[in-house]
Image (cartoon, rainbow, N blue to C red; front, side):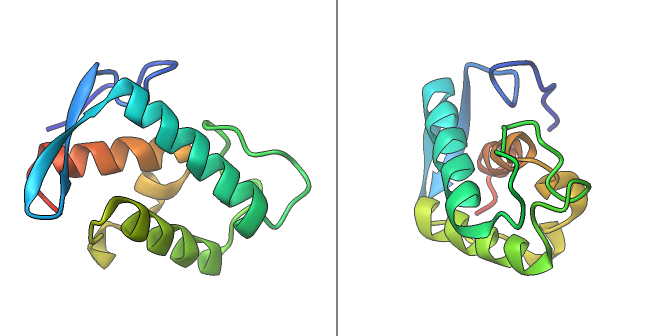
Length: 115
């Protein structure tokens, strides 16, 4: 299932299902916004290799703000924060190019029943 990204709500839906542990949990747009804010803060404080502030739509790889080790740190943070497991095959540029893409990826994984 694919969701269009729209400005303000990464996945373009008012609610997505996020699988936390053994049962799916609804991820409302406010949850997405909170995750977006927390992930931006994490990247700014713990991962970013640059001096530019990270925005949800910032291309983290092209700007050089995040390298491959940074992606590993982000994946670990997402797994710990959300109580999910991210398949290594899903750790691709399309899903981790920006905070917005990561939040949408996580929501889509929950909606498809993965996790």
